Length: 166
Image (cartoon, rainbow, N blue to C red; front, side):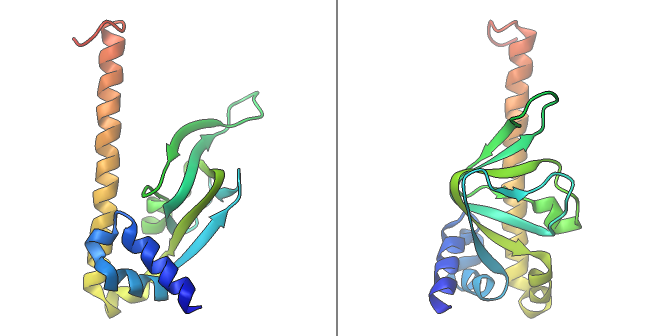
């Protein structure tokens, strides 16, 4: 079991949140609040409409955020998540149901953090949890910034008929 904890701690520390929580924080999370999940090709991690009270960090492979398309058997890929990306933050924070299904594209691996496992650490190690949540918020902010930039580029493209900037 110790080697599994060491492996999980290394995966957490090497993820983007690792710089916020350090090696010792990664070790505490690995021991008390994280688990590694290996996914086969096309395996569902999160299903639309269901809350898992967990969030995940992609540590290997790629995951697709998908949405069912009427009259089509294959779901549409809305976004592809890669190593270091987070998924399920709202379900973790407030119990919200997942807005879309997340499935693996090939063999993938994630680290899972469940709210019930994190909650006791709020009292036991508040500085670690503060830094952990700060890292999550920073990643979410980075994602929103990228989405806004892409949305502005698309708006400009549409407004100019594809001929360049306004």
